[in-house]
Amino acid sequence: MVCRVDPLQMMHKAEKKYEVGKVIDEEQAKQRQIFDRAVMEPNFCEMYAGLCFHLAWELPDFSEDNEKITFKRLLLNKCQEEFERGEREGWEEGEIEQSEEEREQKRIKARRRMLGNIRLIGELYKKRMLTERIMHECLKKLLGQYQDPDEEDIEALCILMKYYWRDD
Image (tube, rainbow, N blue to C red; front, top):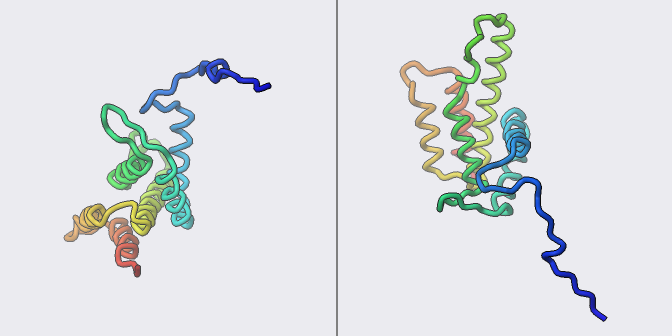
């Protein structure tokens, strides 16, 4: 005798309906934590890039408003946002009330984060997750102030060039 169970009877209604593009705060925090770790632990950027490469192949794509949403696209958007923000993160309102030591710690953290993002971009480039055209744009932006270069931009440029001129 074969006992059959109707799959619809086994399903239950979820408390919170999943909607594409609307991620619960906890999930957003997890995603942000993964990215933050990648940029704040630059010695592990190669490992994080490998993880991202794997996830880009394994995670499903979604569509929202006829637009394809992929892990790779979300990751590259986050890298670009972080790249464009640069060290501006360190200069916020209320900094006047902070001690010199607090401001310096904030500046060091912002610099470390920016350089970590540069390393992650370089590792993603090595994994061919971003194109040469994107690398060119990053390099051009870092070269932008060649008359009066910013020390952090020069350091970031040197790090990125190391990845760009890699041996295949």
